[in-house]
Length: 275
Image (cartoon, rainbow, N blue to C red; front, top):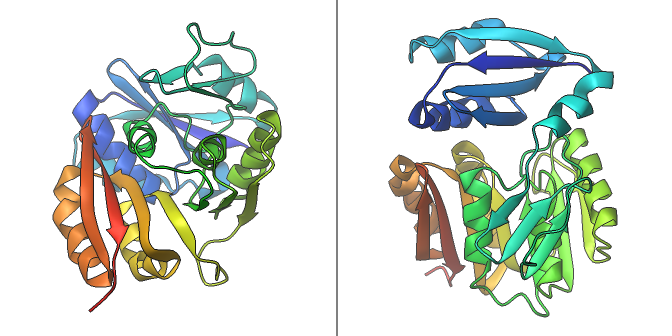
């Protein structure tokens, strides 16, 4: 499958807003460079009129490049750098040397085009919130798993079950590879674009997706959590917080804490009894 790479000259604040809007439009990967943002989308999903509609409101020009499938991994890997979230979790590719000093947890991933390499503020903020959660003996669900790193980290932290889904076949296959690379034995991943078939209840639910999906599935996420369970969500901007809480609180959640980074927001909520 070939991809289209769109290069836009955008500052950091513009890049954050563009990532949010383009992710909703089907763009699967983003590379942030000084004064530029590169967004990737499968060639068959590329809609130039839709792209122009998004960019026109920001007055941003772009260039377009077609990347053949056989060159895809080489392009992505050449730009992938290790990520260290505090001294808690390091994320690197197999071709990178181990971290020195060694963090509490180290995840090795194949850096393909699944979202969730740890570079983006949404993923790193979820990882920071995970530091404060006791995963030992817990059942965990990763909604929109991307590369699988959150489910893998949950298992490393002691989860006895880590189920993960993603709507994208590329992400599911990448997660399977990453699960094997990290010798994870309790992560199960499958492809799905909704939660209808999920009936198990969990202690922790991780959802690093986007505003519209979070709003659409808020009641389903509450259904999947045991009372007292934790929901950690991200993929939203600070301006979205009121809208998220207006959906979460009636669904049976109470806000516990928030992390804001680079104009992105991550929230930790507790599942409570609905009156």
